[in-house]
Image (cartoon, rainbow, N blue to C red; front, side, top):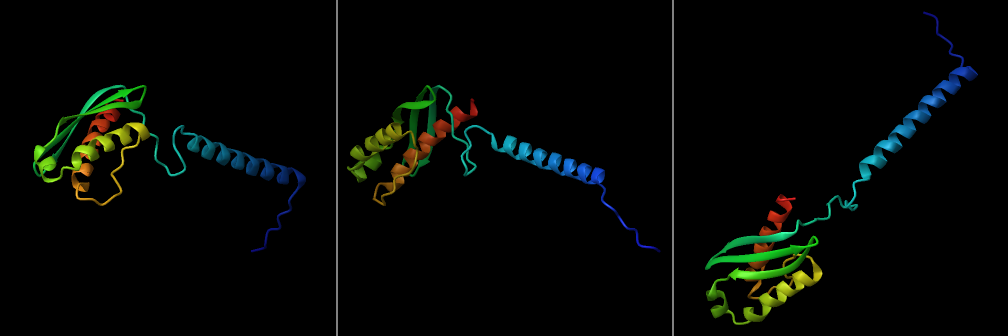
Length: 144
């Protein structure tokens, strides 16, 4: 078997360059279209857009349910009402009378539903309240 000698002519070189250029352009277009999803930050999580309306969220606790009503206007949280809240929690920890309204105010102010960072006696109840709010907001997302 004789080795085959391949001679690159100017014509063949131009064809290979054109194919390589088309491949590079195709990859650039593919990745730019893939990354052009509006509202997706670099972390990969989409920004949540809530559908306007009034939504009810419930979370079970040791002493009963926490039930919230979340009002969404212009895709933002406008109001949160506690419809149901176990009185036994307040009987055991009087500070909850101030902490729960403060938590609700912060959620509306910051438009961010996060659990409180402080590890207090009332952290369990506050986390359950946040979960009830999230359950209501999840209904808004499901109806989108």
